[in-house]
Length: 330
Figure 1 (cartoon, rainbow, N blue to C red):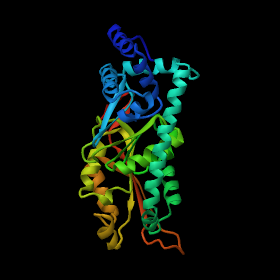
Figure 2: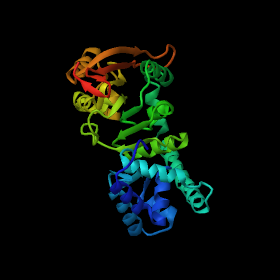
Figure 3: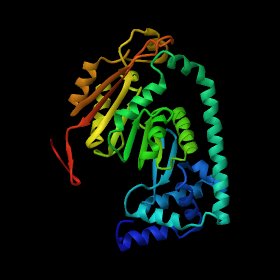
Figure 4: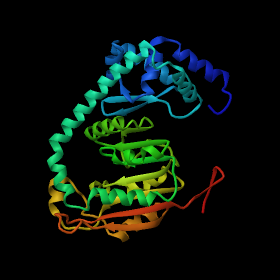
């Protein structure tokens, strides 16, 4: 907590948690993103009662809610004075307390069920994914290039657009303070949550969202990654403009996608709208979004493999300067 809080803020926060179930909910949401169904299973209470408690905690700005189709996920609030109060309260709870301990055991069971569901989905689709992965440059080589591209200076916040299984959040999770992954696929989000929970990355979360219309404020993230996503889209330039909107001044956008190729079956069988991107096309899109390309690199498949597609990386930076906590136009 950075300083004194207003009386009304403190009063509303303390009143909201001055009830046993709501305090237990707060402790659970500090551990993981959960749905109403998750909480009813853990707390063994009815759905209407849990929903009522969540409403009161949300009104006090202690928790946040985001919707994915018919589901709503809840987590501890990330910003603001009320969020600071919530974190302070949770940190003061004794993890050895029998009530907290029992809730954590039930939470572990819910997480295990998620992990099993994710593993089953991956198993059903593994052959299809492996077939495509063998066609392009090796994942290890691409990830090494990604880490190198962003490794020249630290960053605190990361947005991963089209997060898929959440691999980019996992890759950088240990060095950031906040990470969010966006994807339209509920199945992919299931995989991503299981991955992040397994890695213990509580400061990273995923949610369903539209890459063309992000429900995020402008200037929100130091780094944005769009990894193997644009070739699925009808309008890649529009997606880049929206990413640039939420990029902080001097922030960096990393695009990772296929170089131009002629494998038409990917369009016909796997919904690829674009068969890769030429450097000049991507450079034009980035420039139109107010970003300057600072690096472009292609990684070819290794010789002696089935690979036929090179993977390209474009790193671009927001032209605005961040100076002493304020922004100016460069």
